[in-house]
Length: 113
Image 1 (tube, rainbow, N blue to C red):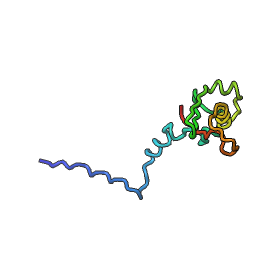
Image 2: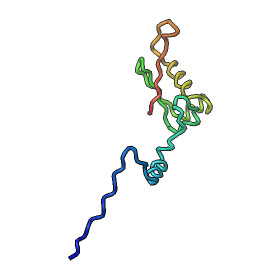
Image 3: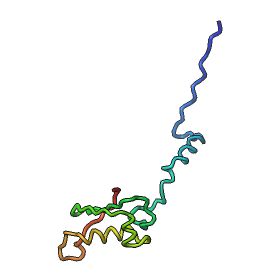
Image 4: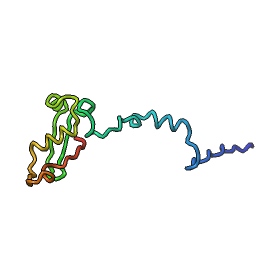
């Protein structure tokens, strides 16, 4: 009777070893690898933001303002920067008035809706 031997196990890949080409192809073809321009959302123009709803919150008074992207474009133009639009929206309803210009107003935070 002939004895069958198992094929030798493939060596484990360690930190100093090169990664296989198939691995890098899979990583780079993943849609999350090219997930955007790398520009933070608050620095993008309204026309560059793919979200339907935009939200800005105040870290000081916890006020939340949401606006549809289409409405923001209609009111402020498609070349307006979201940071400027969000600050203007918060300042219109700000409750934190101290009388000192540096301390007045909301502290915006631009997060996902």
